[in-house]
Image (cartoon, rainbow, N blue to C red):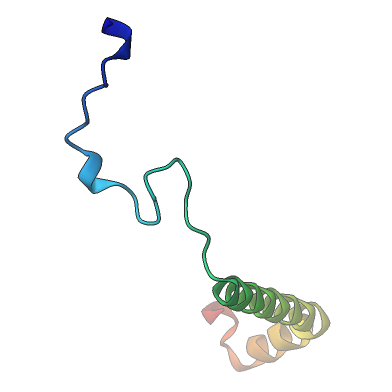
Length: 75
């Protein structure tokens, strides 16, 4: 009979993580939220790639122009 006893509940059970349903499953975030995050991440990556490509293309000209005006050390 000892093996059939119910395990004591934890005192910390009331502070479960957000989204936890209590049945070892979590709720899925809405599809629209995932889509928005994916769009924002794609936009940020595209902006970073364009900025890096612009620096590769025009970086030497920017540095020389700044050196001529004495502002090269401010980069």
